Structure formats: C-alpha cells, structure tokens
Image (cartoon, rainbow, N blue to C red; front, top):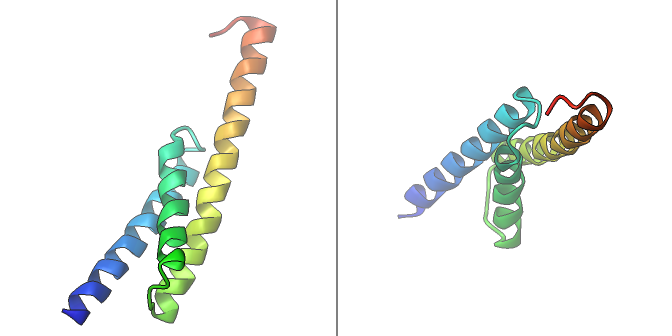
Length: 90
C-alpha cells in the first residue's frame, strides 16, 4: 500500500508540473493551468507528505511556473483592456 501512495504522489507531482509548463507555454491565457501548478505542491506541503528529492524539486519548479503563468494571465488581461480602450478591437 505504501508504494501505491508514493506512486500517486509522483503522478500528482508530474501532473502539476506539466500543467504549469503548459500554462507558461500558452502565455497564461488559461489561468487554470497555473492554478493547478500552484495548488498541488501547496497541498502536498500542507499535508506533510514524504517525498523524494526529485519530487520536491519538481514541486518547486511547478510552483514557480504556476506563479509565472498567473502573472502572465494578468498581463494578458491588462493588454486586452488597453487594446480595447485604445483601438476598440474587442
């Protein structure tokens, strides 16, 4: 049972990292990717889950990429608002 729990933690960590990177790659258009990249590492940390050093490293990268993705989402919103006010494009 213990190995199955570690396997699930690894899969969650990989999923969070992948979604955070996707969020950065799509320039923050969908904030859900960044939110997942932030939420999973925070929940694992709050629950004091035992993780390998590789998983800890992946979670830190996921957290940073998720934050970058959400910041890019805010920049996208500001750009759309400015373009709409200036040129009436949207």
